[in-house]
Image 1: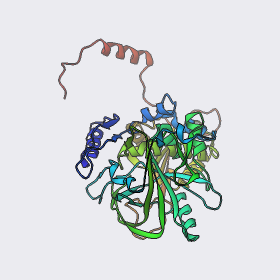
Image 2 (image 1 turned 90 degrees about the vertical axis):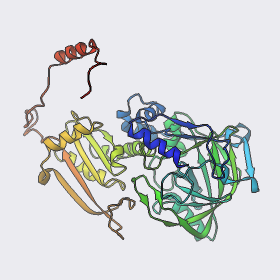
Image 3 (image 1 turned 60 degrees about the vertical axis):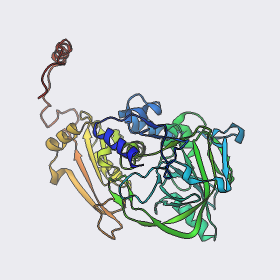
Image 4 (image 1 turned 120 degrees about the horizontal axis):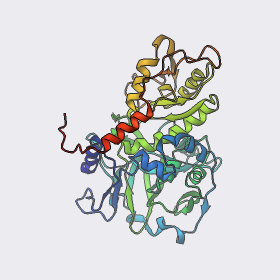
Length: 447
């Protein structure tokens, strides 16, 4: 099924990010699936922002931080009121190969679940955790499951294994984009994501007990598909290589074996797929990162007004905007942001710079930075080891901060020590826009 991912790449090159629905996806056995495929659901920042009730995607960071910081507890519904349990497949009928999972990239060894939200729980406290983690479908009843080593799900799994038990895991696929964003809220351990989801959607998230584990693992009642089973104790198999969010194929790893016990779904289920490494996958997590970084930095730098994690920087770069910062405040903020594990470069700018415009960011770097004065690096910090620039065997990374804000005035009330930007009077700009609006340029040659 490379063709569906190829379509996403082609759309991305054209700068187009529509939601894509495949009515009749072809399964690996050549048959047409009864389950439609939906992708590019979160490729547009503007669309994701609207799903969160945010009118302007540029203001997502403070609003996301506020919403997830005001959690709403979930509510439990019965199986009869849960669309995701309209169809229940158990035993031999619980066949993973009936799901139209995609083989996305050239080096992927098979079809992967890329938008499956893995839910486990801490056996000591009973508190659940949810995270998007990949699964390679290997047979009708078996997948590899790769909970990243630093993840809370991996921690839960290791606790079960240390007790000599298989780890219960439930994967749920498909929901409202705001719920998908809520599961990417960056929380402490152990801490459930369900209330953060409620904060984002503005109402309690509807949950239903899973078929295999009952109330020990709840699942969203309005999801599309649920896969239940166990990560088998100390059983590992090869997984990957896999096309990662970095834009590179990650190496083959040893991953736990997952054994399916039950599959439930809606009567007319949709299979949600993330284009791994495309904006479709980057946008929701990056926007969640914006909210987390905003919360971290605002506590030490009140002058912070906004945060942007651009898709071009994968999940490694962040931009921060400030209004009238005090002495040393921007440096404090940069150091605080670099402590966030995923980031390896952070740039600070003034509030006259449009962080969402690459040309504006380059302008700030070109005209407001002296590298010896305005940048610093910190070695030996934690980071994403999926970064392909990381040296083999390295456990820590080198990170960089750039202060692209103007120097402060010599004393309060004094003029800025730098020249003003070149501008044209607003009245003249309005007149020029009016003139252009009245000219038909459709037949003008394109140079």
